[in-house]
Image (cartoon, rainbow, N blue to C red; front, top):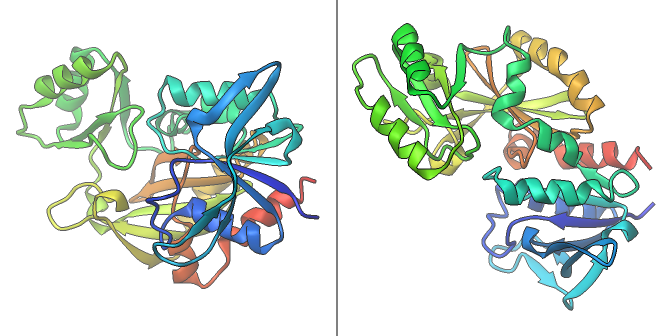
Length: 312
């Protein structure tokens, strides 16, 4: 049955069509006969008792520099559509949170993927706190004395913004590093959020494994290896994707978290595993579909759409 699909995403013009997961989701939806509509988060609104979006009917194609065609700009009521994809990138700020509240007003009659209530309640770096036996030593605090005590205990730590993404603002502070107070001052001057600190995992040099789950079930993984001289493995900052298999520890982690993700409507999730430790559960706009498809010769986007179509 053809579905009407609205995609809430960042601007489509600059995306890398050979890496962008949202593009791959759109491409597969179109191949399955679904109708596509694209809009940016700033064009989502509440008007006259309805949640509306202003955007464009769109078709996509795998042609670099010519990867989409937009129709005439129109206003739609999202209640008239079958599926809305919540796919803009963080930062997970009040603008992002507001979009989840607005989309709550049409879900579940219009299926929002991932479920906006639980995207809002399960930020990437906070949901992992529910699984302390799977994670490295972690603290979340704004108080500098708590952060200093954590560093004194673990010596070599990672410090990062609680609601960042793509490796931005991630610092490794080794045993002799004296910059914790300065970084604390810097971050506190930018916002009023806590920071997250985790014990540094040396195994990151071997890679940060991104495991893709669909409706709570693992479908595969890629390994992201940091560039030379880098601690961060994010592909946004030069991390190199490599083929990797799921191991017993990955499956153990997925078995522990998968039922909760499925129960809360988190259809497409990417978790990060370093040296057998779960470090993040990415529910906002996870990536890695295209790399996994190339490495494992599987159609991950098809599996996502099968899971969604089964709900109708």
